[in-house]
Each structure stands twice: as structure tokens, then as C-alpha cells.
Length: 323
Image (cartoon, rainbow, N blue to C red):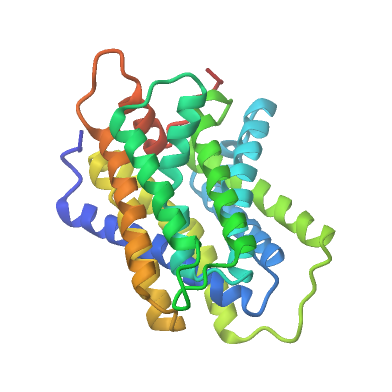
């Protein structure tokens, strides 16, 4: 329920920030990895964002606010690797292999579909609408990826596989969240997740022997700063605020809007082609997401855990102990 203090203007502003910022991070990632290796640059992004958030939290509540038990630290670190390092950072690797930023956003938008599959494998009974959404989503994925004559030779399979893997990792992290020990303070939890993700990606960068090639231009520096400040801090803060002040179905609309913003920005800034195959495949993918999310937000049946699962996924309410 929306608190009375939250005005429509404030909600509209926060929603706009989430739409634009989370829809534009794929373009920013593309601009960074054009000049800087993906693992190292995304690792540095997460580490810097973690330091900034830690400093802000300590300023507001003292360093004691950042104190965690070893179980909470392990849980937040594990989640950070799943959600941010694998689920977010790997998208930069996929884009480096030739997947356009707009298509990347569409592939990432399939997260609700993978979560539905996890729920099914764990013994939960998804609704018919969810299963239909999964089927439609797989069709949309095939339309985007597979070749269709000379006009559409298909996307690079290695890049697509990496991005799909990142989406699957993010989905698993979202699904397992309520089942592991995590801090009550969502901002402290996010700080530790960023720190763990940054450390993991930095180690991966060293292990794979990434090296800088030449100087870094202003465009890449600007995009990197945008990812740190807006992608990792402002966007998350606006999203967390929305979850406590706006109806969940309204907050969920970012799942549909972000890919549209990403495709539009990729076309305008990077001249990425908006082909009929991209439009049709993207529309099918977004339709599948609408079906799955609609099943979650629809009227709840007796004994059905779907609505609660969706609320946990969206609200990021992390229990202090696993279930």
C-alpha cells in the first residue's frame, strides 16, 4: 500500500529514473568496453560504487551500521557474485562478442521466465499463464538469435550464450534470495554485494590476463562514471524507494520499459540497426514477460505462493536467515 507521504510527482520522478537509468546502462557498458577490457572495467565499477556507498552509509549511521555477522557477509557476498558479477558483469563480455546493447537488454528482460523455471524445478506449481509466458519467451529468443535468410544472419552464439547465462545467474540469485542469510538493511546488503562482485570480477580480469590497449578516452571515462554513480547508486536508490512507496505492479513496469529504452538509445547513439526481426522478436520477448509478471500480480488463489514470490523478488526484502 502506498504511504500518504509519497506524492505522485515523487513517484513519477523515481519511476522515470529507473526507466532511463536501467535502460541506458547497456549503452554505457558498450561505450566503456569499446576501450577498456570488460571484466576489469566492470570490476572497478562495482568496487568504486561499493566504496562510495559504504562512505555514505557510515556518514549517515556510523561505521557500526556496516557490521555484519559472518553468515550475513557470506550470504551477501554469494548473492553479489550471482546477481552483479555473473548476472550483470557478464553482459559486458557478451556485448564484447558482438551482441548489440538493445538485444542484450531484451535477453536480460527474460529474467522472470527463468525464475518461473526455477520455481517449477523446486516443486512449486506455476500458473498456466506463467507457463505460456515461458513458451512464448523461448519463441522470441529463437526469433532474435536464429538466422533468417540474408537480411538476418543471426547473432553471435558465444555472445548470446554469455548473456543468457548472465540472465540465468541473475534469476537464480533472485530466486534463492529469501532462502539465505542476508542483512536486514537493504543498502548495507547492496554495499557488500557490490564489494564481492567487484573483487570477483577483478580476480577474473587478472586470471584471464586482460590488458589495457592505449589511452582511455573521455567518452569511456564518462560512461564509466555514469555506471558507477547512476547505474549502481542512483538507480538502485530510486528503485528501493519505489518499492516502499508505489504499488508493485507499477514498479514492475520497468521490466517492459527498460529494453525499449535500450533499443532506442542503441539505435540513436551507436546506430545499431532496428530490423524487422529485432522488432518482432523483441515484441514476442516482452509479451512473454508481460504474461509471466501478470500471472504474479493477478488475483491470488488460495494456497498459491506466486504473488508472495513476486513480492519478495521485487521488494528485495531479505530475511536474516535462510528459509
